[in-house]
Amino acid sequence: MYQGIGIDALLTIFSHFVFIIIAFRALQALRFDKLLKPNHVRESQVLLVLFAVALGFMTSQFFLSLVTAAKNLAYLFK
Image (cartoon, rainbow, N blue to C red; front, side, top):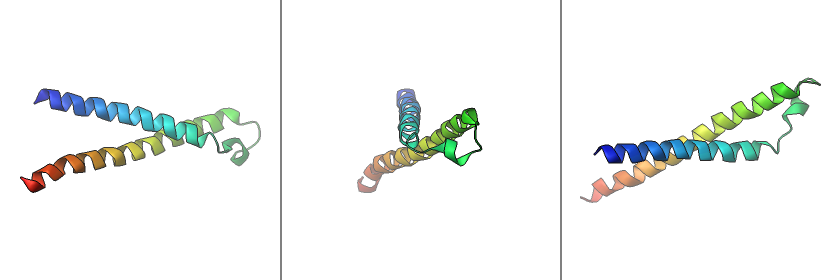
């Protein structure tokens, strides 16, 4: 019982990190420094990280929700 909870926790942490990294790599194609005032490079980098965390977390939650729904489909046929 507790092993299943531990595996779910490990999957959740791994999923969050993977999707945050993917979002960070994808968002690097955008030019946040062009949207902000000149000479505010640090702020554009912080904005990039915050957007990556938000987008990665939401995508990971969606993925984990699909995994949970797929696991629960087994109860439909029992």
